[in-house]
Image 1: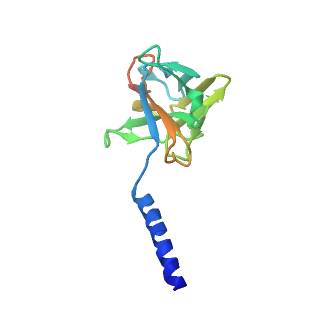
Image 2: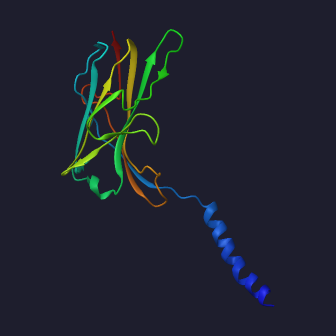
Image 3: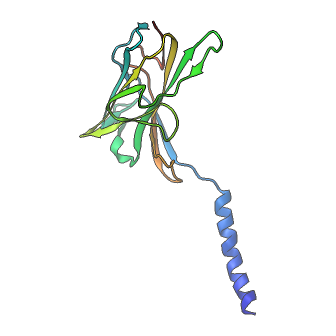
Length: 186
């Protein structure tokens, strides 16, 4: 009788846990747009082998968006900020060869290169009331290249959890108000 009573009490509890796993939940990501947040310091159409393309981005803690009265405190999100790039080289055999940057192909003044979450994620460094990132990509081989940026986003190395609040800012390069550049290395 005790076993039957225990089974009747515990079975709704097990079913409740089972329902929890079926209902997926996601982080609450606020999506915004703000152009010109990343600068290429030495934007050119042609570089020499050994040159470095420098990406520089400084984000003030308080960001104004579409509406001047709409501001967001970047520090209100207890997550890291970063932006990613897609870096391609073209060849006769393959029009787009994806290049994965590492510590030997980059120089870092502010921020870091996070290789744990995949390729080419540049992480901002918190300095005072700003987030800063200044990363140089070494151009080590001749060829034709294409480089495009991902959004500036909040992230956590272990992934965002259910109920996390995050921010995703769609942006462009300040030099050309585009998300992509093409260049040649000689």
